[in-house]
Amino acid sequence: MRLPPALLLGLLVAGPAWAGDLAVNVKTPSGKPVADAVVVVAAPPGTAKAPIRFPWPYRMAQKDMSFQPFVLVVPAGAEVAFPNFDPVLHHVYSFSPAKPFELKLYGRDQTRVVRFDRVGIIAVGCNIHDDMTGYVRVVDTPFAAKTNAAGEAVIPGLPAGPVTYSVWHPYLKAVRNEVARTAVIPAAGTLRQAVVVDLRAPPMKHGGY
Image (cartoon, rainbow, N blue to C red; front, side, top):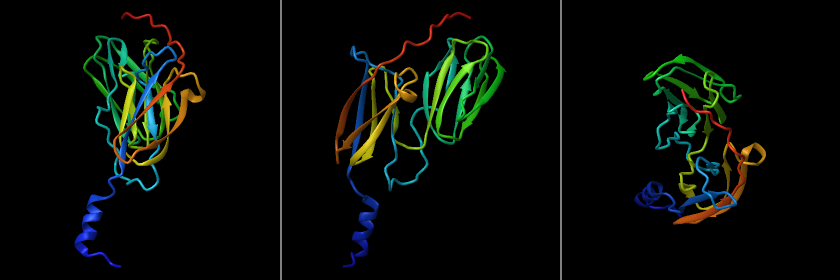
């Protein structure tokens, strides 16, 4: 049976309305919330191949002798700004296989830009200030988010059905600092998941200029 053109057009425009949100709360065994954990759901088969764009700035600033944010999530192909807001010179670099780079000495209110074209985890440091560390997580899916200070990350608009998601943190005690979980996304509404992880102690910081 052939559908009337008007009805067929309406179905194409509206599309299926079966989508829900995934809210993941990450905490330690003692109940302390884990900030800066990255939750990633692989794009399900059939997901439209539209350009990926996240709502947060693609920027990792040098401020107060630290990288801010400590963890940044960007899509493959993104250009990330590295502005220096400190009153000292910084020399930003990475030896990570996914994106080795070097931004030689530059000062306050200057910015350098790096394009991250490969999926992976890029550890970032300063060649002058060893205490400074940060991480760029490059993904190829629109379904990714980072936990806030309360340990919660929300990924909206997932197609209904079973999914596997990963939780990554640079100090997480697991292979590749990552654990995987499964869930079934509802046709509407929010599915809430709790993930308990052990973390290693972060490196000691000495501070100061």
